[in-house]
Amino acid sequence: MLKKFNTTPGSVILMVIFIVMGIAQYTFYNQDLNEYKTEVNNIETGRKDITWSLISSTYDMVEISANERAEILATNIVSDIKKQYPDLSVLKVLLDQGNIQNTMLPFIIYHNTYGRQMLNIANGNNGCFVMSRDGYIMDTRLVEYEKSWHSFKEETSFDAEALYLTLELINSHKEKCIIYTNSGDTANGLPKLIHGNKDDIKKIFYENGIDGFKDLTFYGKSYITETGDIFGTEDINSDAIRVNNHKLIVVQKFNLYDILQYHYGDDIAINMLTFDNMKHELEKSMLVRSITYFALLFLNIVALLIIIFWSSINNKFANK
Image 1 (tube, rainbow, N blue to C red):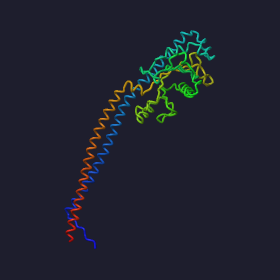
Image 2: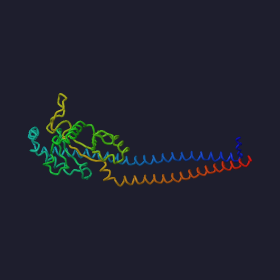
Image 3: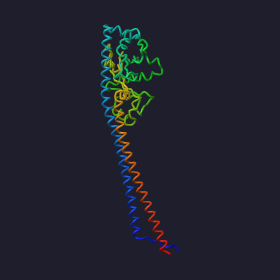
Image 4: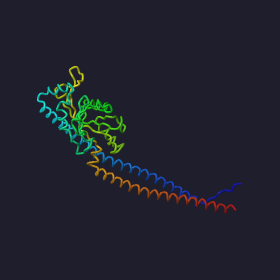
């Protein structure tokens, strides 16, 4: 026959008190944990927002500068061409025959573009080049101008990229800047060529940080000329058909990652360190509170076990 288990009213009250205290402590701990997660998220968001503000203003400034530099270079190139060829028809005949190497055009372009690095960052991501509709390009990364004017159509590995970029440059008059990915067909989930959309740039940063800009090259551009070529041949004829004229495109490249690191690396590092310290202090505070909560919860459990044990002892002697 089972014996009745009796507890004193005082024991029951104590058990209820400790159970309620345990539940309250667990509830408060969860509230503190959720507040901690919210504060950590606010710190991360604040860090990104402040850094993005710097990136945004830098991009706006550099985008304007890149296009202005391209326009200045285009103006200077046109001026030098007209000085060398007062009669432009002489140059046009040579170009129509494909004798570009026998003209002064490579030298003129080389003279105007060589060493023109964006914000004094001397690498291939921040130079400038000139491209024609046929994919001919003068790239400042090549030192000897006699060897630097070439057709990508003769280099299979670059053919598709060069022609694709050429067409996009020609067809993107409304865009201030073009963004071109350097790695594979896609980078950061975006297409190989992006039409200067600042929302895309912001998305890249918030998802990948500043490192997300490493594989992106930005192109400011200017046309010789806007609606045709230097010889007056329009891009679109009267039948609305695109004409294969001698249009030139002056392109100023820049890499946003390079510029941010070169000119604002210290500011970004200080900003990250400041927020890292805030996060670290928050983590230490949460650790102390967690230890306190779990210590109190442990004491509550021990107290409950003691009450249960003591009640069972009293019950054992009461039933004898």
